[in-house]
Length: 546
Ligand code: ISL
Ligand code: CA
Image (cartoon, rainbow, N blue to C red; front, side):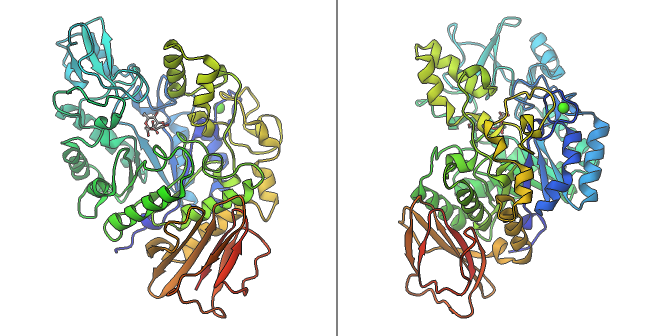
């Protein structure tokens, strides 16, 4: 497998509006990120992924863009963004920007023109259709609303939107649209950015004719449609291949076979992807399913394409809450999940706050939530007759706001995030979980991440090694090896609230005297203790070099 800088990278995701507020308006900002760059650098990461800071009415927190080439006031200015890029590079890190080109805001001048009349030159930049007998053109659901179609009285037609009604989809069939997007990409790349995280990039191509679906609630008809690979190859040819950059596509609804079409080496499309078999399709921890996902992606991609590893981001509830134990074993569990994400094949992502074991949030009232996806769903279900308290209870666990609460810097008001009123309330547990405390504690989750990331820098086996699960069929223990050029690592994880006994299967040779303990999340583990048969404590994680 050929080696590149981006395969070896660890990426840190900054949801800037919740990171650090420097002017007291309650929103994190780019100046705040600049002030905290040393904190990020100290973790050892290579790349920062910045969520969209572009001009936007902010109905979907920046994923509804009204001007691709300017910065929204809440985030700062273009000058501040330029300083950010400079300061990131000055520290030897890289910056990748979010690219949101499946849709724009309905306030984008392109859409304002497009919707103004049927013969406007930009009419065909979006997807307009006549209704069918007074109803929408087909029965599809969007991510955030009951229909993908919104009626516009001005011209008596419907426009298509995969997300909120305020996020009309661009018509990628139109070559003028593609050229406009490609030139915008050059604009950012020529400023010196190091790549893109591409929002729902597999949604660009739509099914010809928009036929009704037999299962409208299963929205996978939105993605992976004929034409998508032509668009991405054209993007690669006209834009991407001219720069030494890193690209990661957000690609829901893919299996490893389809995934390889996007990231296969030699396909000339993208470098890596986020698939959503875990984040979208595994609501709570399911060890057997998780192992199966790891195995099939490893077998599908190893040596041919590069995967990503993540368990949470700004759309998905914090991992220690959703997939671990955020109560009595919070610290051990956060470290175990980190051990897993950083040792499975693929590029590891750290979502801000994960490195101090931040948890999901519980608000009493729907009014305290901000997420448009959750709010729309809440109103839809209540309008259908649902009991408001029960509806809220059913939506809390996976609300995107779970991961969007302000970064907890210290035990001061608002967790030190802002001197004003935060746009979303801080998690009340900030007094016990915050950066200041993590930095003062040598056994903190933070320093464990730092050590894991350092191990990755020093050991190519973590990046390029083969993967072999020794515990297939086991619902609690996850033990696997990684191997490269004669170097063999053993990763032991007890994903349970109680002890589990693990015995090495026949055929796995250990030189007991020569083995080396590389990291452990319980501090009292003796490196020399034999591992032929081990009792692992709740949420215990260890890595050995055999
Ligand atoms: O949030 C999800 C489930 O809770 C995901 O399915 C998510 O909506 C989907 O992966 C697409 O997300 C991306 O595009 C959206 C934006 O709202 C998200 O924040 C972004 O990550 C539309 O641009
Ligand atoms: Ca601010």
